[in-house]
Each structure stands twice: as structure tokens, then as C-alpha cells.
Amino acid sequence: MKRIKLLIIVLSCVIVSSCIPHKDTIYLQDKGSSINDTIPNNLSEVQKPYRIQINDILNVKVKSIDQEAVAILNPSGEEKLNASSAERAYFDGFTVDVHGNIRIPTLGYINVLGFTTEEIEKIIEKKLLDEQFKETANIFVTVKLAGLRYTANGEVGSPGSNVLFSERVNIFEAIANVGEIPVTGNKKDVLIIRQYPQGQKIHSLDLTDINVMKSPYYYIQPNDIIYVKPLKQKSMGTGETAVSSLTTIASIVSILATSVLLYSRL
Image (tube, rainbow, N blue to C red; front, side):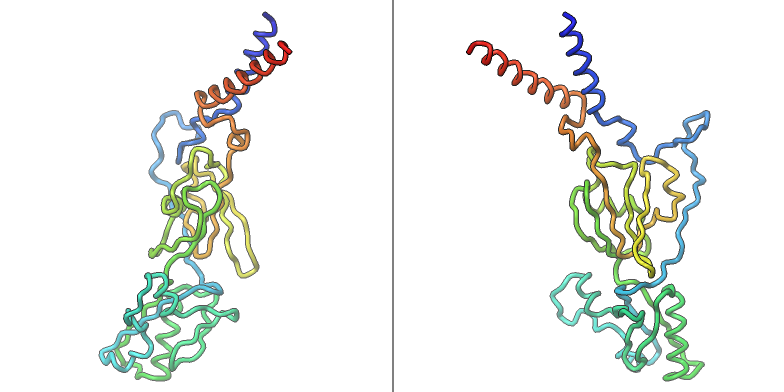
């Protein structure tokens, strides 16, 4: 009788420890000490202007009253190129080289490393006015990143690289575009591997905490790598829920009991 009780206790402990808690699967929980359950709606978003880095691809367009005069500066367009938007951006855009420069027709090399797209617009506009146009010329320069490329690995639906054509993308949008995090993924410690001029740094985000929206890493940047760790329950292989864990353990106990019974008959 004592052995049976001991077995029940052991199995109960295994089931409890192997199940994934419900609170670990819910995004944006209010983990504060507030008395009511109202989620605060005054969280301030933190996003610093992105500064251009090596290997970024820029899309530069110049508009003028005399459009023929600036035609050489603009992307070639579709040009019957059978390619995706990302591929066209690669071929038509200006890639930042290892020295932080882009090479624009008639303007030559322009250093853009560490500048924002708005700052680069002003640099190109000034260079055009100084070297090719009169100060009173009506020109309009736009500079944009040719897509926001990032990579997601680990416990996500579809690991791999992805390109989004948007000015800003938060961590939830980025993950949603690669197939969501399954139950076995650790939402409390999602890693962001980010490129800096000095090298790479790793940052951690707790997606189950609503205060993640205050994080300076809430919005992803070009060339970010998102890594979602697996929960220990996955490596244990006991199941995601109490039912699946109990089924697995019952199967193991059944196999052991059958083995013992057959061995005792020998």
C-alpha cells in the first residue's frame, strides 16, 4: 500500500513539473502590484531613430520639375525584372559598403554610416544643390531602407529570414510573420541579437510582461536575429498539458509493468 501511495506521489510530482503553466503562455500580462485588473494604457513606446549600418540597402529617389535631369539618380524600376520586391530592392538599392559609403551616380561616394534616413536626405539634397543644381532648384529627395530584413530561429513556426516593407516593426509583428511561438517556446526570455558598429549584443525580452512595450528593443531593427528558447518541458518530452503528460507517463508505467510481469514468469 505504501508503495502504491509513493508511486502516486511521484507520478503527481512529475505531472505537475512537466506541465507548462498557463501564465507562461499568455502575452502582455500586467505583472504589477495594482489592486484592480485594468491593464494600463499609458505605456510610452520607446523607439530611437535607426542609424544606418554596414550592409544596409538604401532606396534613394530624387524628384525634380525636370525629371530627365535626375533620371540617372533614380532606381531603374521594374525594368521587366522577374524578381520579388526584396530582390528588386537589392538590385536597385544602394548597399552600404564596409567603409560606410554608398556610391550614387554623378555624386560619387557618400558616407552614410551612423546617419538616419532623414539626415541622409539632407546630405544628398545639399550635395545636389552645391554640385549640380541652383540653390533655388525644386528638388525633393527621399531615402528609405529597402525593407527590414531579420531572422527568427528556435521555437517559432517557420524559422528563417524574412523581409518586411515597413518603417517600424515590433517584436510581436516580427514573430507573427514567422509563424508564432508554440506552447513549447519560452516567451519569458526571447533573445534579440542586434548588430552594432562595435559588434553584436544580446538583449532579452519577456513577452508575457506588458512592460515589454517600454523596452528599447520592443521594435526590431534591420539584421536583428530573434531566438526563442525551448522550454525544459520540451526536452523532458513529457507533454505540453497535464493530459498529454499523464498519457505519456501511463504508457511508460504500462511498459514497465508488462516487462516486470514477463520477467517474473521466466
